[in-house]
Amino acid sequence: ATRRMLVIGCLHGSERGGVPIAADLARRRPPDDVSYLVVVHPNPDGEAARTRGNAAGVDLNRNFPSWTPSRPSTPFYSGSGPLSEPESAALTRVILDRRPTVVISYHQALNLVDASGTGGEVLATRYASTAGLAVRATPAHPGSLPTWLAAVLPGVAVLTVELPWTVTPVLADAQLRAIEAVAASL
Image 1 (cartoon, rainbow, N blue to C red):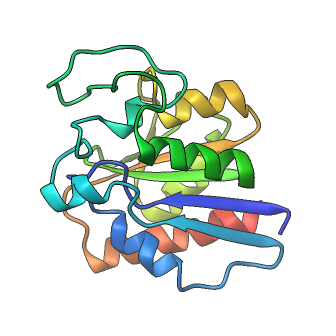
Image 2 (image 1 turned 60 degrees about the horizontal axis):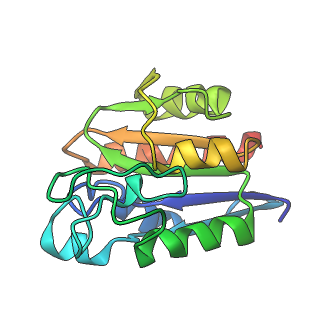
C-alpha cells in the first residue's frame, strides 16, 4: 500500500486504554491502498508491572532521538541516551523502514486528540469529531515520538490520542471508527 498507518496501543505500561483498540484494529481489513501496521504494546515490561516506564524505569516516549537528559527515578526519565532502550530503538527501526503516512499513538487520560503542529491537524480534527474527543494542542516534549518525527519525517502526520481513564466498549468502537475515517481520507 502507498498509504500506511502505524497504530501504537500504548507506550506507557500504565496507560493501557489503547491496547484493546489496537488489537481489534489488527483484525480489521484496511481500505484499498492503505495498510495498518499495528504495535499493540511495545512496552511489555511496563505493562506487566503497570508502570509508565519500561523495566529500566525509562519513559519510552522521552527516549527517541530528539532526546534530552533527565533525572533517573522520575516518571519521565529519558534514559541514558537517545534510543538507549530496545523498545524505542525497535519502534524507530520500524518507522524508518516502513515510513508510515500517519502515526496514531494512544495515551491516557487527557480525553483529547493532540493537534500540536505535527502535520496532522486536519486528521486530528477528523479523528476527534468521529471519536467524540476534544482537539487541543499540548506542549512538545523532548525525546517524544511526535517531536522526533516532526524533525526527521516532517511529512508524517502524528496523532496523539489521549483517551480517558475508563475506556468503555462504546468508546473503543468510536476510536476504531475514527481510525477508519482517517484511513479513508488519506
